Amino acid sequence: MDRVTKGYQFYVMVDEIDPRVAIIIRTKDRPDFLRRALASVANQVFQNWEAVIVNDGGDPQEVDTVIAELDSELRPRFRHIVHESPLGRWPSANAGVTATSAPLVVLHDDDDSWHPEFLEETVAYLSRNPDEYGVATRIEVLLEEERDGVLVTYDRYVLESHNEEIFLTDLLRFNRFVPIGFLYRRSLHKRIGMYDESLPAAGDWAFNLAAVSLQPIRYVSDRPLAYWHQRPHVRGVLGNSVHAATADHSFADRAFRDMELREYIQKYGLGLPLFVSSATATAEKTIGDLTAQLEQLRGQFDQLSSQYERLAAQNDALLGRQDQVIGQNDLILHNLSRTMDTRIRGWVVRQKLRLKRLKG
Image (cartoon, rainbow, N blue to C red; front, side, top):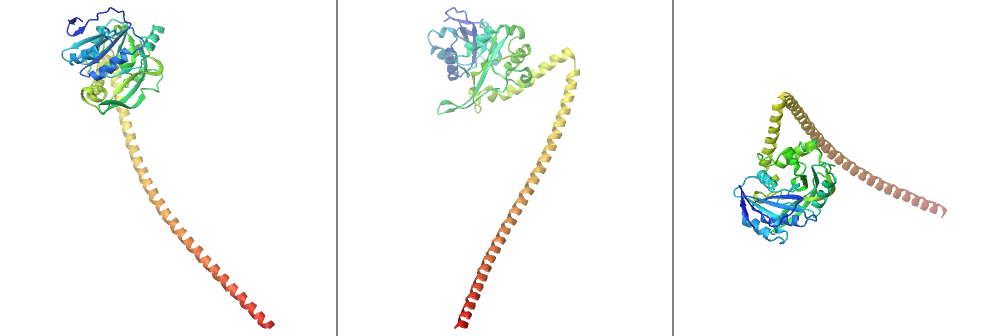
């Protein structure tokens, strides 16, 4: 394979193909995860794709080794772009997008995976719906951890299973779907631009917001076809950014909202944001006051509960003593009854003896 340099390095495919889907895989020093991701791509039922692996400052030899393990027929369809020093998540995503030409695009993180029918169903959906920019699949979150050197899935759930489709009102609060479950048309970049390279994280959320602002994004079906692998307790290079880089996500959330607010103010002025800010402050104070009242009521309830438990204990003690007294009374009545019976029986016997003496 010929190596070409233009700000980064990549392999040129030997065989000319006319791919329908461009798969962008970003990676850095995670060959085991990458191996699983490439197997997920190779096992797709739909095979008209090209794949670009963007190595953001990692060891190129590790990636070359993983590619070399693929089937010889598939190997030429994977290109390897090497950033000699890390550029970040979203410059890497954009490098992959611009290095491909297929009309459909999807980002496949190196630690995620697909159901074999992911591409088949999503490509078919967009073929049936030419006016839609993209389609999402249900995403199953797989929680995994290492046990004896092997990654084991210990829990799983379907992301946003309660929502019928991806609504803009929900997306305004936080991201509702991640790249592994979203196939979209390349023309979407012409409408809304590339991924925002200024954000350290959450570039997919900014991109998704812009996309959903144009039109709804629907689910292709209720069947999970994409798997978001998470390792909540792992930090460092093997962790998920949503857990291992929470500071990046927090900053990106605030930075993106600030950028959009600034752009709005430049167009329409400070009036509405100032009003909303004041209303928000009032609402926060009201919520704070209600929370304080609720805590006070909770304290009173706890106090009443303690008093009730104390009274209940006293009542139980009184009932116990009452049962004891009743038991003693029963015993006295029983003994009295026996005593009275004995006296009556003695009186009867004595009367019989008297009568017998009189007769004799």
